[in-house]
Amino acid sequence: GDPTTVLQSFVALSRVRILICGGDGTVSWIISTLEKMNLERRWPPIAILPLGTGNDLARIHGWGAGYNNESILMILEQITEAYVSLLDRWELTIENKKGKVKDTKSFMNYLGVGVDAQTALGFHTLRENRPQLFFSRAVNKAWYVVSGAEDAIKASCAGLPEDITLIADGVEIPLPRDSQGIILLNIDSYAGGVPLWSHGERARRIRGRRHSEGEILERRRTSYNDDEDSDNAGDFNTEEFARELDYEEKLAKVTACDSPSSCQDGMLDVVSIKSVFHMGQIKVGLSRAQLICQCSEVTIKLKKKVPVQIDGEPWKQSSCTVRVRRKKDPALMLHRAAAEGGGVETEMARLLDWAEDRQIIDKNVHATLMREFSRRIESKTRQKRVSSNDNLFFSMKRAIGGGTSASPSY
Image 1 (cartoon, rainbow, N blue to C red):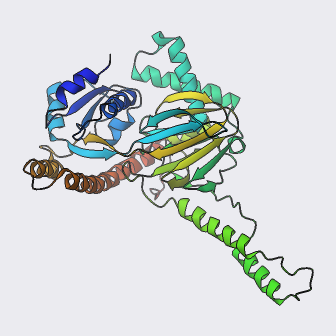
Image 2 (cartoon, one colour):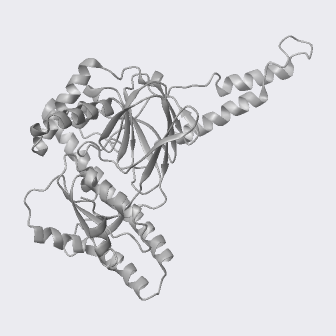
Image 3 (cartoon, rainbow, N blue to C red):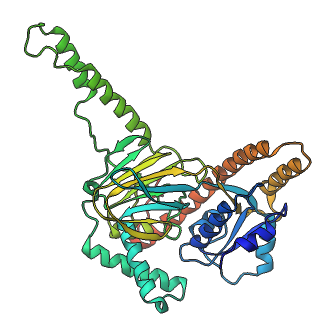
């Protein structure tokens, strides 16, 4: 049922913490409910007991890949020791050809267009028609593989770069010719823990411009030296080339892909997938996603009906314009502390709460300090997680390939 009544009964308490038992969809549902309640005070922070299929939000916040019959009392103790971490939330608006907004949706994990959404759509359709076939995480994942295998044969998303236009921070981004799907990541954990961004590789640049800098300078020198009455006089258009250079500078900036993934930096990480088979290779560490760009706003123009998904919710979307913007307020999540007793992270969060309770700082200063503290702790935690994932993926590659080469650098 509607959780609003239960939440209203507890949110007035100053130290309440919420434990959500479910998957990413359940977390999104509770956060959406909290948003609609228009609370005057800060949202209660959220911990997760992972009971879903992918559990990507639980993974990045330290709660693990799934529940394995651990002691509930132990989990509750871990929640009291957990520290607050911020999570960006994003809003997707769908506009028709006249610019009228037809629908609005929210997501926190990722948005996919193309092959990954097609696989999710097949899985979703099967689960709705045959719910008795889905009774455990392992079985659910197996059916997901079956759904992907079916689309691998059909290759229904081949030619995606011709069907969509990607605009990031106002710059049109050329897509790799072999792309069958793009994924906009808010968190670096996809489809059950795959770190698409930190293990990705930069896509080969497709240059959309018509002239190189050398050609521009040569054209400029030629135009200045030509006789005024020459047929070539005036061929060089200063404004045109200035616009072209400006576009190149903006494109280079947005496609640099030189920042680590963060769920609280106001940026989306955009990657490209070549096929369902490519997705499978990425899953086991035999290939990498293609890094496209990082940006704070995205516009996707769909020229025909294509599959789209947000956080595992798929549908077929007809031609339209999709705009993605960050929501004003982030969600307050609880990250499990690595050290027993909570460690310095937990103590710092408690110190900020103590200072606000005694009016040493106001809620705005508390929010600013918490945001910066959360960012720094996330950076520290990310370095450890990436290093751990590097070792795991390299071990898998060696086991599969039987090689003994040195560990690759990322």
